Length: 277
Image (cartoon, rainbow, N blue to C red; front, side, top):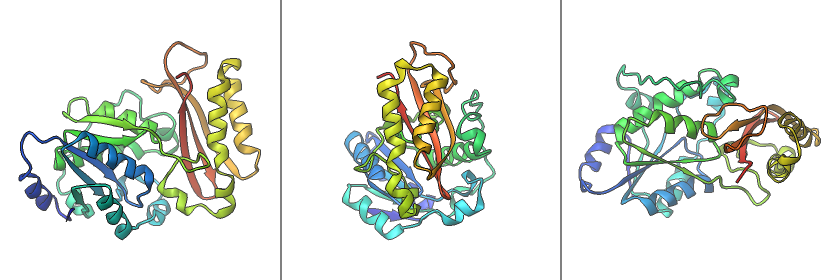
């Protein structure tokens, strides 16, 4: 496995890859876990050459403390990437990614204004900017993102329509008790971690029972179930059309996802589930 720290090194290494090779790309912010490893596994399976990046992007944090406290575990990250067959890892600094004044603008048609966009102003501006920059640097054929970050996946798919990158969504990987794997999980205090499975249990209950409730009633019941431990503060619960992220008030024949954001002490967790499989 090759490790490079600059885009010049990266592009020099990639120039040696055959033109007909499919390059798969997994952008990460490090603190890797089995969810990230599953993305690498998908990339290795569906690509000829797999590139990962480790870059904690400052522009997508609207809370300076969140950026400062974001876990950084570079040595173990590199070992995991090697074990899972990654070919090349790009570990840039901020100046290497933001080396020019270019800015990528795309009208996201409101996808960035709801849920995460409402509660984390500017977050998706940073996501779109850094992902478009990384795509421009790596020039992958395919890029792999987890479905846990459902809104982010929708936005990256939308912004990539004209970038000649096939954005592949990969299933959420969960802990044994159902908690969606996240780098932030390692920041959870034990008392919160012990109860955190209630988030997925509540979503799974909703998937099994949503037909018996109005949309507003379902959201209220999910909130009650998450809050009943007394540990968690629900920031939002939303039921949206899977393709458009438009909130619904009544059930339709379209695919819908239920999305939640929950505070476990100082740690913010998100999750989602498709209701009508």
